[in-house]
Image (cartoon, rainbow, N blue to C red; front, side):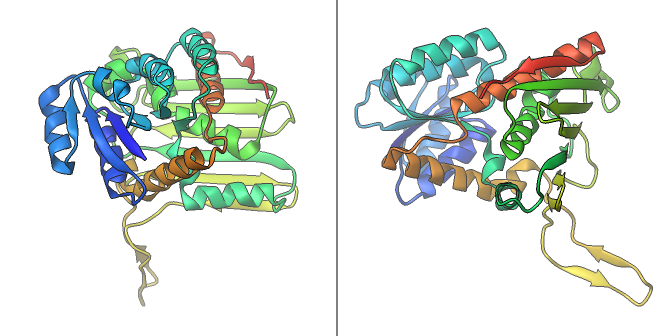
Length: 334
């Protein structure tokens, strides 16, 4: 499968490397408005660099695109790629404006192209095992889901200005995890609170760096999301599902599986993996593999465009809840 990758930043580099390493993929183009940046990355893997999307989208030998550019470009690139008949893997979020997402959905429906949204946590083996345990009935009826999501340090302020904020950028993954694991549909009640405790400059930008969200699904089950932009001990990512028959959880991943116990009754283990690129390196590779297999076999891709839209609905509701200081109800559909 021949790919064009849009974006030559941190996410673009990850996807480019994964495409180049996959036995059933070939990297054709790297696209970035900063041509020199695109060229440096393309030259590393023997691909063609472009400053704009026109050439790769017009190239009939290109089968698929990966959109890892800034969020503001996602809808336009999805639309252009769909019109060109390319399969699409797009990083989250689809957009920050639900009206644009709905308009995009209507457009791509007319072109019937495969599309996957990049919620890579679904492909992490530990989180996937939790989902499989829930589906297998091991925890019985879900009562409470607890999600801890803490990054080691805040991103640069220049990134925060254009990211859409903690709720729409960082926590969008947690909203998708909550819906994916629970299988929830219909009405969701959202109550959110947020503060800026880590960096006052983040607060001056109108954003938060600490946030707590409580979801109540139509079934009556709850989901708690604990989100932070700073975690001094590494990338803290945990999921617990508690239900009528028991509990299942996915813990953190350390740099090794070594634990040490001494006569002084102390114990120690190696530090956690530091950031999401380390923690989910394997998940990104599995995500690409699932995309290639799904497109090749004609299967419906997941996470779907609709999954990206539902996660954005919860993010919008959480932002409104913070502003109103009150719960907000939203219908996420089927």
